[in-house]
Length: 97
Image (cartoon, rainbow, N blue to C red; front, side, top):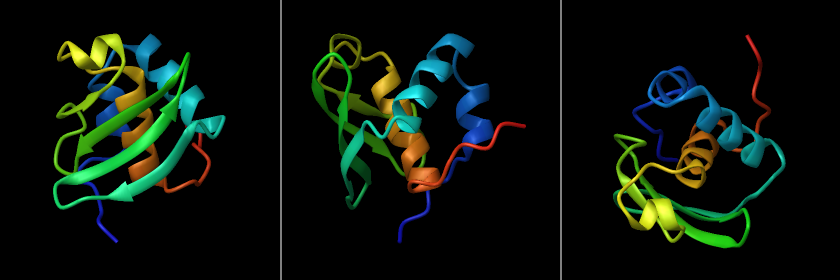
């Protein structure tokens, strides 16, 4: 099992609070599906307005892409963050501190 080089605290500290909340909500509602490890990181289908093809790096959650408008334009989106959260937790609940 590939372990990402980031954790929830690094993800949360690296993005705006609103984007973190939206990503955490997607993850908590089980919207990350078809999770797979790749040689460079992780891929999944993340449902939002539509199902989006998403990829994030094993080493940096800000490196990756998404088929949504923001992700297609080089911006870290909530779908990428939801996938990064899933890579860290693998389905376990987010524990609020």
